[in-house]
Length: 242
Image (cartoon, rainbow, N blue to C red):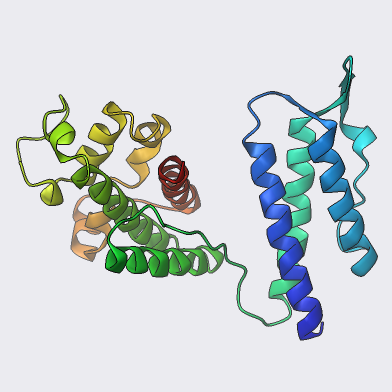
């Protein structure tokens, strides 16, 4: 594959990734025809440029029902298709010997410029670690990023944070544990409740830094813990980007 083809394929990968996010943000079990049509157009372009790379996209396979003014398709089926398509495109890119596929996210809502640069740098490293299946690194870096984001958020809402019912007695927000930051941010509705429900996978991230703690506390981690840690980071990013 030439460098030009690789660049084109990367652009398609990120385009499909955005389409996947649209589908995942859908709360209903069905989706209208417009996003499906846009996805079909993009898939057609990929098939034209890279024949046989991904399975054909046939919207009729995902037909759910016909409404008064539109046709609706099953979200679950389209989500499954996108998972397959993204996996194949990703493998095609990475087998060319180029750098791993990573996502880029902006953290413009972080007011401290130096802290923002550190988080953006660490986010790129998290992506690389995830591709390399370095689960411990993903958890530690994700936990650190989540802590930094929530500390920055609560410092900007210090009066409310300190008076929250779940706030610890420590008045210095920068010394709060991650679990306290999460609990208070959720209580104040600054982030969604999903962060609290999933946060068990990152609460012990500091202990993973020291091998002795990992042994003494019998901490275990694998693919699922890393996925959840990254998902919590993505939820916090989404909530603070609104």
